[in-house]
Image (tube, rainbow, N blue to C red):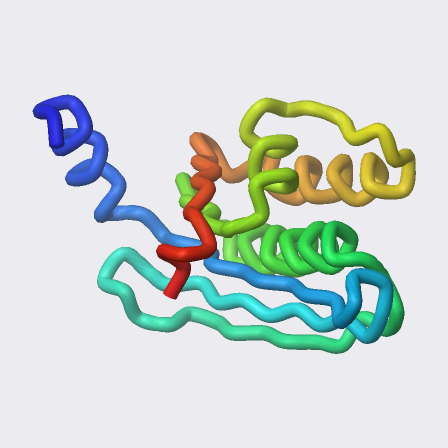
Length: 132
């Protein structure tokens, strides 16, 4: 680990973290989502889970981040780190990109609106093999 990476890691230890996950059976089937927010001392602030009906994996992930962003907004959390193994959602949020799917764009806009008052939001992708 470089000195720069170590400094970034140290700085980020004092942040709230949102971890979230969504899934869809057969990728257009029964879907669900869940997540949790930890405070800087790694204590649970809130956990949530919910059924989403029959939708795709990507929509389950996006709806899940929407719920997490509502929790962040409601609790007025500043400088959160948002961590997920969904590269598509994390990349879209981190790079402020749009999707080719207009329905997904509506969800992404709502997430951005929820997070607009939470300064310095960091989005991190973690490989599924390292997601625990």
